[in-house]
Length: 304
Image (cartoon, rainbow, N blue to C red; front, side, top):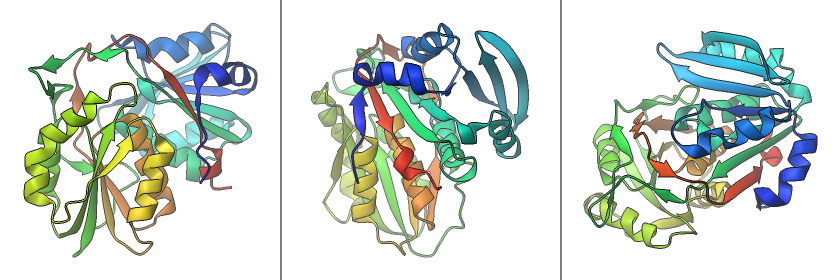
């Protein structure tokens, strides 16, 4: 697997000249959420702004040359493929901005673009914040206001098996792992993956500390994988190396957005995979500033 991960500054001119459609989430208090929208919209390029709303609906705004062409609400699962066809995505190079989208939409849209309405080219971006603002105490991060019921991610639902492997990508909130382990039954093997940000090595210790009690009580195999928090390709590689082709797998992406996308990409290649999520409600003002901007070329995953 060729690891096509770049710094945005090295690829900016190429994207400005060759990208046909940016898919982003709505702007929020987080400065990162509006970076790509402002860059693309100021150049008059096509932008699709999407947001999950109640009752499995998707609200979208489509902008062309800075003008809103369509603004509507559609069924998430049935309407999204039709919307992508309407936008002629099959003829376009698409950039998906993970920093502005929630985890569920990242995974859902990844499957749509990889398997259903396949673009000519597929890129994703992720912006690391300068710092997280919701630190509590000396080791804890409170990045979510609440977690909801643990359910399958739309289009990644599978029937529960008698013997299954659970792979959890861990973030800073250990209580979320506890909720997953209490919900998922018939776990024959548990694979924990701990994320570590390259820009802040001490955060690896934070993630380990917050999950240590759970890991010590639940992990029969003492081996814990570690993975760069911003590497999609490294996370996909870990999944391929640790999971057999015929294994029944449950993925629980509880960490970073790149790891959520990695779970979706792996599930598109591994037919016995389902993805669950606890639908965490993220804190407002959870991150401050714009740090390194990463770009991922994902066209090799497209099902052509």
